Image (tube, rainbow, N blue to C red; front, side, top):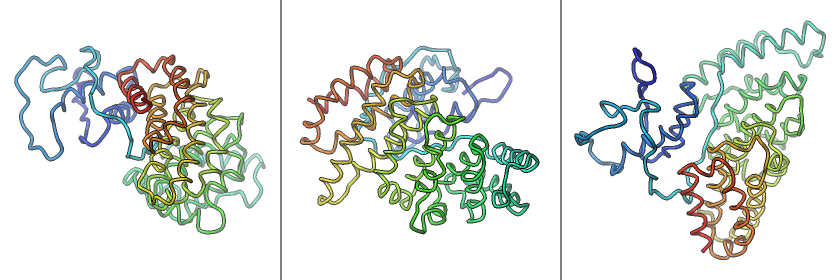
Length: 373
């Protein structure tokens, strides 16, 4: 993709099994590019992979007029929108992670806050981080950069971050929480934080980071992202499954009143992951309990979709929330029939949101309506 004249094009890796919309969003975020290109990049991916199938041999593209630029390269703003993909969106089957943020900046901020709090006499001795702690945290930067999908955090690294998250003043907790959220994808994080009677969810709840109207909304943002990233591993999904009631209760206030766009997006992703978990192949003996949980989740999702907060306008978050709703509807005919009346009204609210005009949102809304027929 050509972004700037005189500079080499940026490569955009894409697998056919991935969502073009998710790949487009990640590409723009990773390269610090404006989200105004979101729809065009996603459509470009779809346009250039039409007809391709997994396992197909690479073939040269046909010679034809290419409005996207030479060598099938995309230049933002050069062309209009392509047609919709025609691929079914429901049910979703792939869990989504949120691995955002600069690890080095976060660790630097932790060190800066530690010095300020210590010099100001605002920390008791048990809340201090040692030189050994900072050495471990600095090593964590390389772990996160080299292996973001599983950084293999140590017990010492996790303990240092939990000290900051649970014992420091709330405004200074954000960078430590941000790092913890990224570590939640790792099985070793689960074994370190959930080995006893308490889970990491209990620990964060007791630390108060899920409370509304804190000095900064970012504590809750990263706490919800941590819940999202638990779904990256089998061990994490077991924790998320066992803590369904606790987790959904903790985040429920933000469904009706999100405090920031990032918080809204994290919540949408959490609901999507829980929907995928509930709709996955579980023993038939668990169908009643799954449907009971799904009913709770549908109500929470409806609160998000009917929310009129100015923070609830992100089209990608709207898409994920609708995918969560639609995925739950695949649980069965009886469940759909029970939920049909309420969902029809919720879709009217969702359709009034600005993001509802995005092609992928229109497609998933139509699929939901088809499920309800």
